Amino acid sequence: MGIGKTFKKFPKTFWVANSIELFERWAWYGFFMLFANYLTGSSDIGGLEFSQAEKGHIMGIGTAFLYFLPVLTGSIADKIGYKRVLFLSFIIYTTAFIALPMFDSFWGVFAIYLYLAVGAALFKPVISATIAKTTTNETSSIGFGIFYMMVNIGAFIGPLVTLLFIKDNSYDFVFYISAGVVAFNFILLYFYKEPEREQTKESLGTAIKNIFINIGEVLKDKKFVIFLFIVAGFWTMYNQLFFTLPVFISQWVDTSVIYDFFHQYLPFFSENYGTVDGQMQSEFITNADAMFIILLQIVVSSFVMRYKPLKAMTAGFLVCSIGMALTLVTQNVLFTLVAILIFALGEMAGSPKINEYIGRIAPANKKALYMGYSFLPVFLGNLFAGFISGSVYGSLSDKNNFVKQEVAKRGLEISETLSQNDYFNSAAAEMGMNSRELTNYLWDTYNPSSMWLVVLSIGLVSVTALYLYDKFLMRDRK
Figure 1 (cartoon, rainbow, N blue to C red):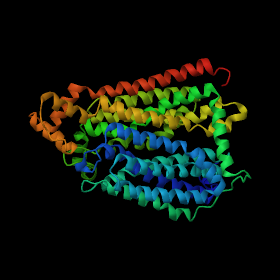
Figure 2 (figure 1 turned 30 degrees about the horizontal axis):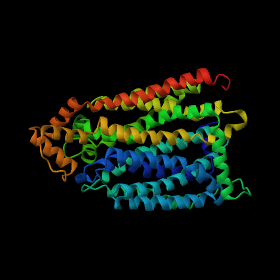
Figure 3 (figure 1 turned 60 degrees about the horizontal axis):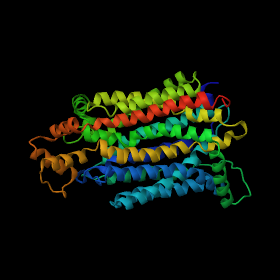
Figure 4 (figure 1 turned 90 degrees about the vertical axis):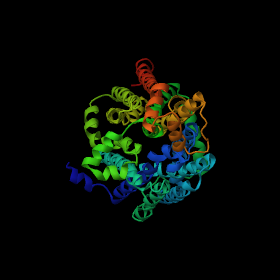
């Protein structure tokens, strides 16, 4: 069957749902890729100057909350209808994006981010279920392939658009752009046709109660729980792409060689994604991950499809671990880009195989139940990632902490009321250096690249545990 004939088999709602997903991911990643630097960045460039630990709490707990809620919001959608839930989701999304720049306290930002997470949690199960209900056994493979392509296109476009709007030392337009993009889905929702839903007589309260009963039943399977914790290690590492890497690049990596290249050959990029001191915005660099996935996912998927899920997953996790660890080793941006490519290859090989493997190891009469709770490692991974990118990064790699330690060690007196950037520049001047020289001095003195050992260790433990798990615990269930 040709691709053209396959496309004709999809109903209109399938294409509407994919378009909605594209704009939702555009809005989400348009702010989320920038969120870590917004929370911790210097106030003179629009940042909130939260500590790394505070950033870790907001992004870790808030995003974990987002991935736990869909098990409940899915039941709500089944009861009151997909279209109504999508409408409610877009209202929450839009109002949350508009409200976020109005708060600059930890608890205020945390509360609004949790509110935003509710909107995302309402959205996630509905759109995935719509894709499932508008595809058949014949069209599901290419249907979900189109869906994931939309996810990655949205993830790639989002930061490229919002980075254009960091104007006048303010991030406000970043959130307003995301609000406008997600609000466009109100128009698309007009063309969305409610898929058929299985109607049950049980109340919503009973349905939610049964959800927690089923979670308890799944968690009684100790082998499966071990697997969930192992895979949570992968998600802990993966989330450093958003939680840690933009901050690390912004603080430590010299991106001037990329800036100079664009300035000479493609000035649009240096003018719109560069900074006044001849550097590229860190989120522009990290966005290479989404670009690599768009370009290479089909090639990688074609290669790994011949391997069993466990082997592909184990290899993917290993490559991913190496790639993410290497991004934190050096101040050389070209090395960072190669490391992001390595990470992306591992991500493409391993991540899609997780659900396939769960389907294989689940008891024959409980496959649907087990697949329904495959979100749990993502939930745990975000919680753990928040701690790693927060307190651990703060103690091992945070440049703002190091410069204050150096100032105290030298007995210098610099006002604590200065913005982070002004404090750093004042410290550099007091020490007879420019800002790049002080950055290099702190790099050599305090060894912030040691963070890569933490990330690599998490990945290697996960890979080793997955291998041992399959070899010794799952021989009777494969």
